[in-house]
Length: 203
Image (cartoon, rainbow, N blue to C red):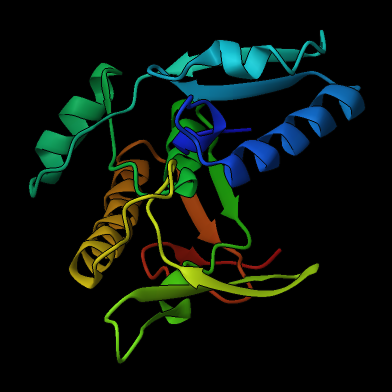
């Protein structure tokens, strides 16, 4: 597992996220009967996680996440190869793939990577507030003001959200070229996905 989002290990996380992470931690702690590694960024308050996951099968591993964003692929690859830098921290999938490359897998298959969140964001035409509709396969839809994590206090502006989206998609382009330089094949096996960086594959 890769825990990249700050709400997993932040003291400032909104109460909604605290409830969600406690539920996640409880499931991992009570149901893991196999060896499991949880990857956390270097700045994570790992004690928050360890206080609720005491299962002996679970190992915690910290990794560097100083994001390096540069127009030059050569410069990016040089920094990635040092182990002190990684790609843009747009979402957890980026670092799951990045760690897969570092783990020397020759083939990486990606599932469920729709990256279509912007399809669920709208602007209220009277207040200019951004709203997001959360859709999940086992829950009803939920619409709320689009707030930044982990504290859910500051609202997104459209330019911030679209810039974040663009940087996220660009990070996948960089990762695809980085994987190619390491002789790693990445296949996007998602049934629906807006990521156009990776070769399409089947499960």
